[in-house]
Image (cartoon, rainbow over all chains, first blue to last red; front, side, top):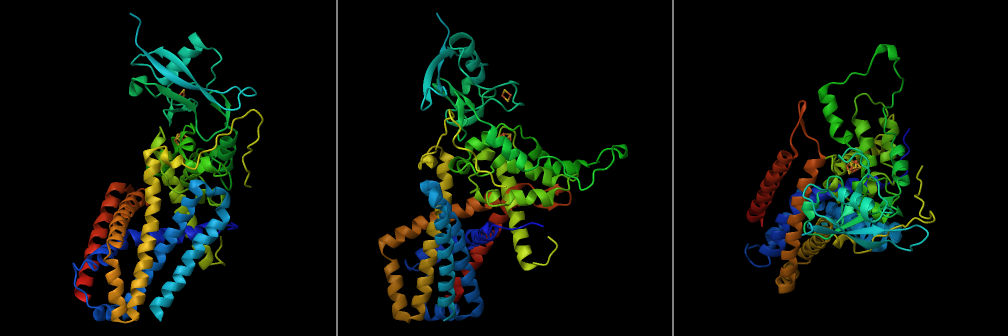
Length: 114
Length: 248
Length: 137
Ligand code: SF4
Ligand code: FES
């Protein structure tokens, strides 16, 4: 009965899931990998990290951590551009934003699965 | 000594004469118990009878006296001069709407949008009057009560940048009202109404700025209604993808 | 179904918000900052992906990359990004608590309580990740 002529719910769904992932997981990772490790607050050994990243469950976790918030970014970035006066270009902006997130997803898979 | 006064900068716009609205300054008596609407009435009675604006109830019920007061959408019958003392107070027509004259804006677009969400109880089959009214428990009433408090004052539209950027957006109050009937236990119109809320220009344009709920004088919280409609719409979308044969 | 509002009634004045509308009210600015947080989060995640990639290029490449992150520019970036990420988390939990109606029996759980539960869970999850990394890395 209902004809779904819009793909908006799909992208919005990915946006929300990505937003949840970003809210729960990103701050602590940002602290760890952006500050604590580079500043030497936490000693790390590349070999052990490599072993860690090699674990399938960790790979799955990293995929969720990196790929899903990209859709959260794409959705918000799309509307930021519209909001600052590019409203007339909304269609190409949407394609470019979500398209970049899809490319990012593929890249994430490539890095993790190689 | 003459009594204390306060300055009002009121937007004037004469259709056919002015290319753009402009501000006109009026000085009115400052009274602690006066609202902005009282000041406008004073101007109309004593200074300039051509000043145009809408109002009716003077008690925050009719929803017709909405204007921008110092840039914020307000019911002018509930905006006290004392809260803006010492002034000047900027009074402008509600933002985002076409201006008809002075402080009067056009309601056409809003009315069309309200009608679109079918804000009435839809029944598959009406039950005969002889069988009595449709009963509802207090708990069932509580589900939607908040969203039924809307007085159609359109302050939320004036606060909504998404509507301002593109009036195609169906907007806060209309969605809140559609949502209100979707929640009503007596209603059977969900399947008709929900697709209207979740079509492209329905809920998805909203970026959850949230200002509609901040300015609403009745605590309706349209922003929550919109987000909940999105959640429902997204769930249904994914379900219809997973179960394409599902009886939707 | 979709009717485009008419924008051409003679005599009507049609206002148009400027591109800088979001500077007009503090809440609009906060909204824009909230939306902007996604950009910083995305940049960080891309950096993280690069870091993982460097790991597979051998310990030397990885060490070089981490060394580059020590530059004041990148540290400043990560400090700012962390602030944005925290802002995202806080706004996200507060907003979703209003959206998601949680019911216990007939009564609705107050949104504040739902938000508090989310904040608590966030803290626990963050600590678990921290310890996992301390032990595993
Ligand atoms: S939702 Fe609130 S602000 Fe919007 S029209 Fe109704 S009463 Fe006015
Ligand atoms: S005059 Fe009726 S709400 Fe203000």
